[in-house]
Image (cartoon, rainbow, N blue to C red; front, side, top):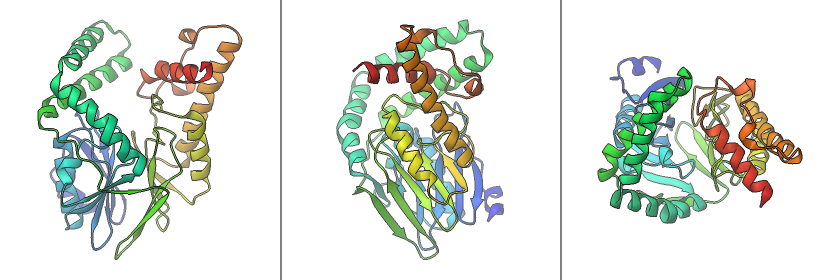
Length: 318
């Protein structure tokens, strides 16, 4: 019920949005350390959460919100992919909740992800140095939109460093390879992977009766898609297949609640990036000279545009 949101103490980390009866999106508030979005789903006899934010405090607020809204503790946590802004809060829900991901996602978390955290804990200085350098850039930045984004990024990094000593890397306990259905007393949810697009392996959560999909970072709303670990062509292939499903409402990995229109915008963005780089290479130009197309100039995650160009460039010249 909508009024349950109104009776819950507001979290600084996210804004709760009523999607349908028993389904709530937790939309990240920029600069608070949560970074990515999360979702709460009441299955009737149990509660499911999709993604767990980038900070322990945000995940703790999510856990409280889930209990308040559903009247039950969280039994299942879904990690849509391995990136830390979707998995760092796992420890808050373990061991009472089963944490679920694809087998590939868990493998990456158990190896690369775990090792990276160990390095950050043993030698945090590079992150502190990056925070300091970004702070200096913020002082010099004249573009107000970009300056605001940089301030958000730095604030979230500072929040992350506060929790780093307390962070316990918590791996999924159940894995699947294609599809997994969780049957609740009131509704079923389908966990689906079509492979890797945004990362080496991406899961989305589909509620066919409600025509709702929780897409993780396969779909972002008014944010530049993040392609650092991406396979752009496979990403397009995945979104082509998602388009065949009966979906009206999308909870994206970043940004506000959206629809299939934003999914198509992400497809257009990826295609445009690939075309821009290919055309520049053909004309012997430099990707450093490629400007953000007008359609994406108001989107957030601005700094990822240049990184996305480089990612596609590196894939082409391999």
